[in-house]
Length: 158
Image 1 (tube, rainbow, N blue to C red):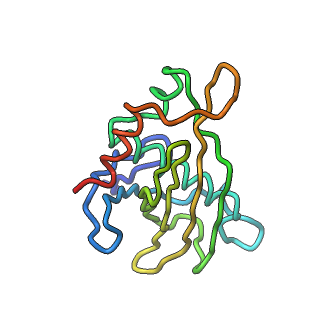
Image 2 (image 1 turned 45 degrees about the vertical axis):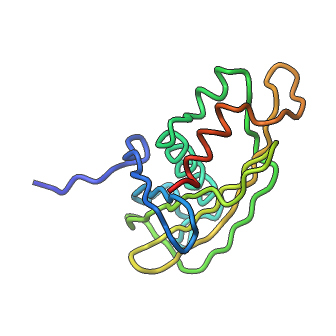
Image 3 (image 1 turned 135 degrees about the vertical axis):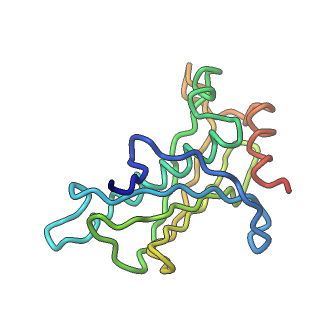
């Protein structure tokens, strides 16, 4: 019988673990690199790292009890306003990777998520995304609603 691994369509909800070095809770999601995510030379195409960051962020928020769907259902959105990515080691088809996600900064109108992608013991990539809070009805900037801020603060609480 073959070993079963999570796929992109069925990521495991990360258990948030306290990370003393980062002074916050970190979520970890395991994914397997699909062939369609590689380029002509057999390495993962760079745009997929942002997709993996999104998977990590979405599952991290869900673990905090602040699923992104509920943000939208309450009339808010968290669009990406800035992203950075640093590739450090190659990742290829069929590799198992772990996406670590945590909140590094929480401001009145924005939240910053940091990421580290591991392939075995190697750090394959690091990144950051910043998301502004806007009202869905008109697209104008808004303060993070108190319920969302409190939920996101759980990622920073011990």
